[in-house]
Length: 606
Image (cartoon, rainbow, N blue to C red):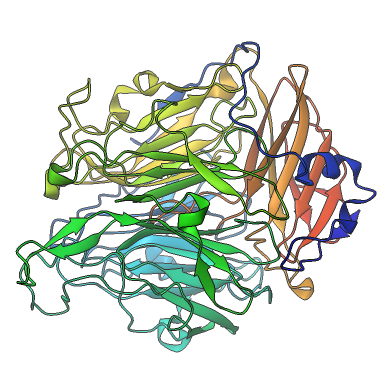
């Protein structure tokens, strides 16, 4: 069944809810989102991770941004570049280093195919975002440059077209940067894709973090101060038009992270921006040197005409801080997507403290008044945690409730030691299990991770989550660098939860939009709902599809829904990017399925 939502700007027509009783109850938004609920205690299955880093990467990968004077920040992306049903991993190299494209061998190991695939680059990159920009069924690859944040000047953007041909190996890419309309452009540091005008083509937003230029104000390619974010409109044929000026999103507050998501669930996707590097002269009016100052988050509501309006202050999202990483997820299963935001933490010199935030979205799912965010990090025990760059929020224990992992450090600025914390060291890479609905709390299980997963003395940055071994639970990769510690190699944490006694069930869903119906093929911006009866209670999980939502990184777009003791679903529905809602048949747990727009059927495999 398919239902069209009619956007009238004053609110949604509710006609499309008629006849879809399950969706009316859960998605209509008549009942406002409630605070985090309490319920009888539920014994959650244990979460078990194994450090699979050692022998997984052939040859090994080492990220070293110290020479020649890069930022040391790197991203990671999970995507199936060769369409063999296995998630592959792309890792950005530091300035002057090659990138790696690790092909998943299906046996727990990965082989670097970057040279054969022609995507090594060698200049240095930071953000990594795969996306099917030409709707041909394979994902292309966009990279931001490296340098210019704390290191010397930026390297350039890169855009690679995926030239997949069925039956032809190896799969190769073509560098189309110069003809794409973004050739030669510089910016740091994050990037995200979303279809801002619903024409079925993914558009590009790139943050500009500002530059300290530590070697002085005028070395080559180094321009001190903040720089404007950039917005590029996809013209088709892998070409883009820079529409930054006049768009409303070309602000200069030092953007570190961004993602396209649905703020008010109207027909147009909105843009969330975390600013981490507002700059001011240390000795005004002398313009040099520069020092960071807190800047507000921004929430750009899409006006539907290629322009945006910042509504963050009125939406409760305009908190001042140095926010570096977002993890959007519906933490309390009320069909409103909340956001964990990583901040500077307690150790930032004169800027301390800059607490972490967890923005709980409240209000109606659709229709006026617009939603409002409430920061609940403090009562949940998350506000006073260490510095963090990156975060991700999948359901690690498959109990039907989104969990949280975040990490990050910055040794160049001395942000590696945090005396106020009990540990007395830097961010080890913290993992929290969501104990809702049993109690209103996130349980810190960091000390249950392998000892080798402790990143307290390392320079960690990008994080990406995925079920890379197709066993039904979500794994993690963390990018580290050699600054100030023993890092440099990616940390690969393989989730072993499914190997426990009576392991929880799950369902992995991948979705495919219909470009002929004005949905991009990756279905970026789609919202997927899965309902099941878990331990006697009706639980409806709600996820969005993103192309770049973590710091410099890209989580798998194959969505793993934890079902705990449920053996089948009671509702599966997709709210497609073109504003059509489609209900699919229910299915059994512990499999991968594909939902193709307009078919109304469940297809096997991703």
